[in-house]
Image (cartoon, rainbow, N blue to C red; front, side, top):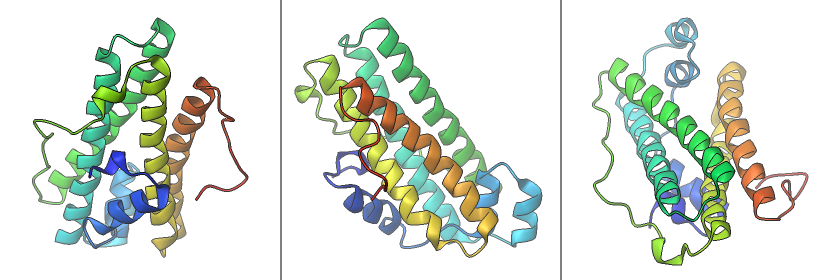
Length: 189
């Protein structure tokens, strides 16, 4: 089962965090946030950080591929396609940053899979594609929600929360696009 095909945000969060069995070090999160001076002060990163960064990179590459499936489906109206490609661009930026960070830490970035198991046969309308994308973004929100409180350094938690905010905006916009209340509750789980 892929990260993006999880039926529950809690399951997605557990799978994302559990794939590596580790959490990001302060240095790794600081690098991800684009703050190399903070990374230097946070101390050295270990092999476990490379492993979890590669897990995140794999998820970002999967998101890029999923948005490509939606774009190539010919089911999206021009304005919706533009939005989807914009979100895909965000995931490409995340993937590029993750890959550079893995390399900076002495690791080898994972590569995209040759094939992903997306529910392509279930994508029959624009609404189907948007619901699929919303589910992906909900899983990302849930994964970051689970990661943020694990950081002892509040600056690092803030950097992770910033990424969570981006994913939450994607999710809200996609929910609204399919006619759902964009923000279904006062709390995200």
